[in-house]
Length: 84
Image: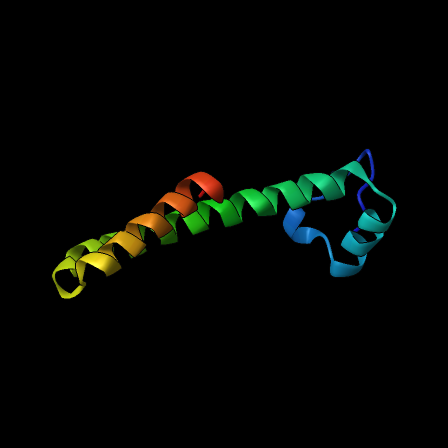
């Protein structure tokens, strides 16, 4: 599935071999694809982060104060240091 000016290629139509070729040649499309994948992963990680925090919030009575403090610290790192 090689892209031409007359026939644009959709991301899901690009084979691994084609993508490897784009990467090796520093093609702008390769960077676009990587950015697209990174955005999807970041979104999914944010979703997972929210679900985990909700789960811990529901179960907070089983955690000691020290464990709750550690969870709060982890949440701060996820949001601020890792930008999730």
